[in-house]
Image 1 (cartoon, rainbow, N blue to C red):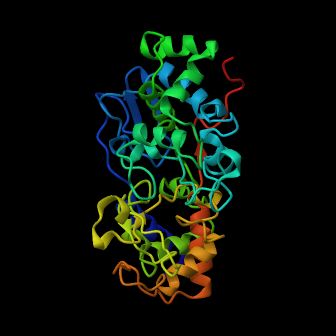
Image 2: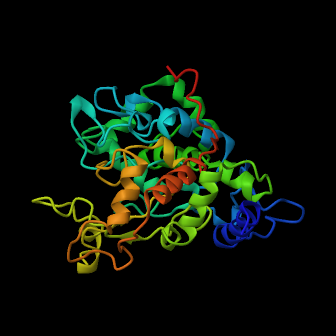
Image 3: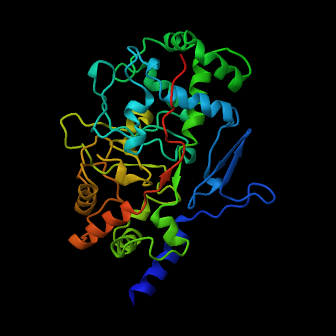
Length: 353
């Protein structure tokens, strides 16, 4: 098979595996436009609107997204006004943290690597263990977590925001009056986060027919991803995640391992299981895994190639892959081809005073 025919066959297979067909939102509207409230979110190439999830009680609005962005970047939601959502979910690092675990107020260290905010529009359960049912619930958690923003209570956080007079007109525009409470704060932050999406990567352009969008190594890596590497078993769909929880063995050889999803469900089969992360812009999000233990994408591939870390709850999906060094390098090249432009990532010019 020639390189060109290989590329075409892989593109066809990838399209069948990843691209979610979507009916137009209504009438003549394209399938890659999300309309919610008065907000229109044009999704970049490769993303389809039918995968979006927005709760009925928190539709998007222009004013709510604007308010949420301000709150997301505002450190005054933390006890000593030093830590914001963006401190640990940094837009300049793929909306993650370059440290294995993030520093909160007073330098306190969290227990897990910060997951990305990118493409949360397509996800319901949040956190590595899925303990938050949605982004609204997730947004409340760090505010009172003693190793993150460390507020003594949500009431104190609300009081701090209410005391900033510059926020009042934003709440009026977003909610119709100047009431500030933790539900409105979390709804606004969640609304903003749903507008942070990434697509139009070299991979997406390649599937659209731009055959020079990906390097030869990336094209070969896509073949490994779909075939011998079996990555598609869990990293599936337009956001490259099955949204499920799996035990890869990461950290399970520790004296007191993090049991992940088990702490939420108390089901034996969930011990050591963590949520499958999406792969959009994954090259910008090192280090990797729930504990940040894998420093590079190559280390991640080598972990999978070994068949994870053996333990009694290891997912049956995790088996040695017997990939060659070249195949591992090609897989890494394909991961880089999944990076696209992230929407609404620019920090606000100024915060309310």
